[in-house]
Image (cartoon, rainbow, N blue to C red):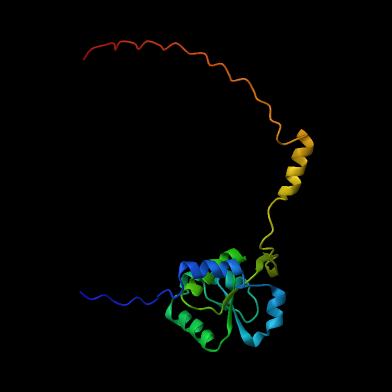
Length: 180
């Protein structure tokens, strides 16, 4: 038996990928993108063809995540790596672009980065704005402070008496009636 060599082989292991994620050096803001210079990067819209046709950033190329490993798209990423250009990925938000970045990074494309923006449409006009990646949904310190003021002290808890459970008498089963 012979086996065909896989077309795509991961060059980075899970540990290296997790270390890169912890560094967060793969994330670009709009200000950082403006400071790089347009000749040093290629914008890549990883959304679907339909979303791309509705609107996109000027000079962006559409390579949807599910089609990223096709030969012509893989050739684009190889060309960007050879020219030492940064592949700047963006989607509706950084979370959508994260899986595409992770796939490229594990395949050995260290020149890929995620643009930390949120895209949407307002009155059918493409809108782009900065995205707060680490913004929590609630201010937990404020919630805890209010809880302490409300109850006086968080550590004081009232013990309630256990509920009494009254046993219910079981009903007798009825004998089956009738015949054949």
